[in-house]
Length: 594
Image (tube, rainbow, N blue to C red; front, side):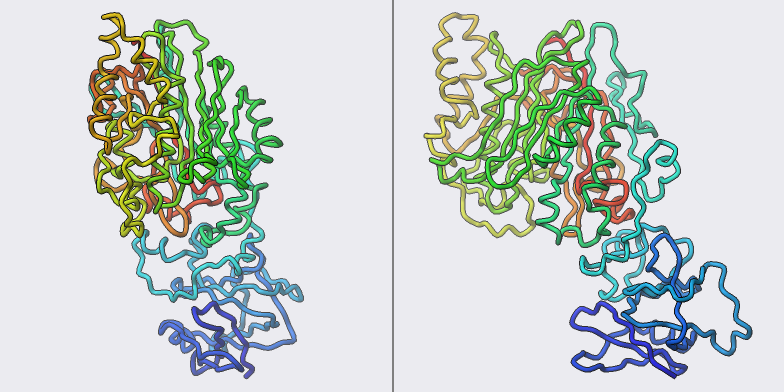
């Protein structure tokens, strides 16, 4: 009997096995380590006998053409990648006259190299053909397979025949395997309860009333192709075709078109893709697009797109976080702040300030993150400031690279942060055991930045102080002056003027399981947010902010998020249907008269 060489993916070297009637016997080949096979694979050879020869060849004809499956009762058997050899399958003698199983299509003389030999359950979905350890753990299955079964980027040509995204609605309806449904959560403000709709579409009974202006806002990190390729280790769980921009962009555009938001805040927008594909496609859908590219060598940035049927553009204000004269600010992240005027006549005629940003990722540089955030808040305070001393409604979207409950997150929501003695690595909460133990300096940024500890431009602050001659103006700016005095008295305290709430609560209400907005090979956490200035009577607003400030926005509903376990059932992100490593966030607001 001839032994066929089988190439697997061991952790520390190649391995070979000989299939014979005595079982799967390990063979030491020249320059190779002895194999490490699970016990159930050794039993497999005693129960099923494989005879190998060279004159004839075969291949499995399926959707993934180089995957050979033996559908039998051994659904737990791992993948074994075959090498460059020819195969002749002969049935064991005790089988009697051999007939091709109904699951196989035989094609002689058409053998594909680097194919795989797979014993699996016939009901297994394509998304689970090569389950990672994370998918097995979160699906509750026993982790009985060896690490050799994990997917690596060097062995992903197995998915070369993945189907392209459906081109029309009928194909999209038919090709829903592996998709997770996200429902719409509608807030009933009268009963202070949340109504869940099974469809992703917004409740039509909750649309604009007479004299009121309702609109939707999406925040979406669409994953720059350049960053994807620079950080390919984060996507070892993905099949190669789903990572190609030509596959990803139609999926992203289809999702944007389906959710039909009035305002889009996009992060990681690659400049060449924006000019050639994203902007023209969105303009054809009725959007006007504003874009700000990063200041360094990375060719991506932030974009805000809004429907011209809903808003007029008052001003567009880019924010660059890089300052050549300040060593602390040596990173190329950016932000973008727009002031929009609703086109419909309503009681609340105020403009709306929309901000979008992507803060620094580095978990050990919380000082840079806080300074970037202060610069964004200062620009928002300048753009959203009205003549009467108050601020127009504000919505802040983006990837903040900080987790819920972290000091940076708490500062946004509560409007204050005492950072005295705070380790630099704990600001964002991204690491359970932070490596950056250096304490934040007091103050964090130098005076030359021109931004006060109240997160406003010092010039604007001086103008406010100069305009406090009248009693009426003094009463309106009383709260602002108290913040300025407090910041001067306690230099280790940061404050801002806005009453901000998060659209999402970040935990499932029934079980308390964390929701996530990003999920790849290394982590699954929440880093994307939509913050808004809540109206006084907004029952969806979370406590902790100043009640004296009326933000003028009421949250009507949101598109639900998912848990890490949910996402690993479809092989994480990106996958065949979700073409970014982030989920899109979507919320519906009502503009309230202030």
